[in-house]
Image 1 (cartoon, protein in one colour):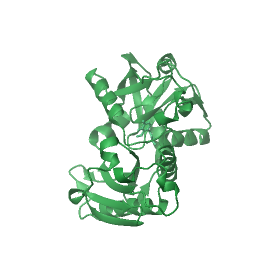
Image 2 (cartoon, helix red, strand yellow):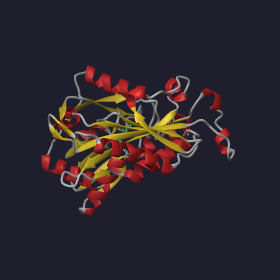
Image 3 (cartoon, helix red, strand yellow):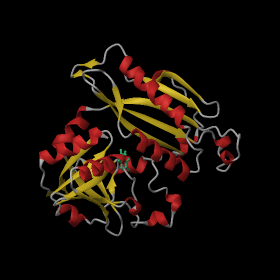
Image 4 (tube, helix red, strand yellow):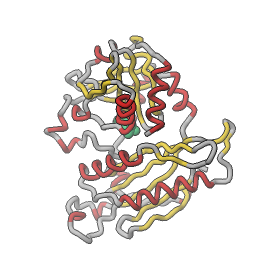
Length: 312
Ligand code: PLP
């Protein structure tokens, strides 16, 4: 069921539907051996009554994809091709013979779409700027299931450990080549941090800058509540500006709460009335513990965040 794959030939302007098992990808593609590419993961929910699918925060995801492309000097991703690819994957999942599993009908899944720079032979970073020059970039989209563990975290929460990200806050402003704030395919460091957190007996990592500013999780943003205000680290400090965090802020403002981007310390998080890690697939996950210290948790506030994210 979750085996659909749509391949995008950007130079030819075509989308081909195929299956993950029959996918072929050139090993010399720069995405494979240099992580030179960008991606997005969108949550798709399926209406239980009508079976109609909905892509959450579709526009903000694609806008960030375009921004990531610009930061890597990649060609602008053709929106209509990526929309066609995502739609083809969704149709394949929804149209598959059996949407039921042992747990019941599938009501949500995610779709990941990505674009690579292409082959080494096409790696001239300026070539794409010349109109009509083929650049060899390729795109693809495929579905991923939402796991039981991810679903459970939405209500059960996580214990996090803080990890030094190894650079000062705001370093990206003077060092754009660090690609801070771009969603690139170079996620080995994020994965290593997540494993390191688990090895320390926690569920999740929380990156902190070398100069003590709280940044983000390896695949999520932090939102804290202080009284009637929701706060999140300033993306310019050195993190990915999340679509889910923006959806939470939109919902919170509509509900009459104040929202703000701010430089937060670990103490700010420990003294918060509540804290969540927010991201597209897990939505909002309450943070129960930071470095072994307990945080307050109110399930009603968490479900309010879930509602705002679902509405986006
Ligand atoms: N920060 C990082 C490093 C991420 O990888 C992600 C998502 O995967 C996020 C934050 C949250 O972004 P979004 O809410 O758009 O999924």
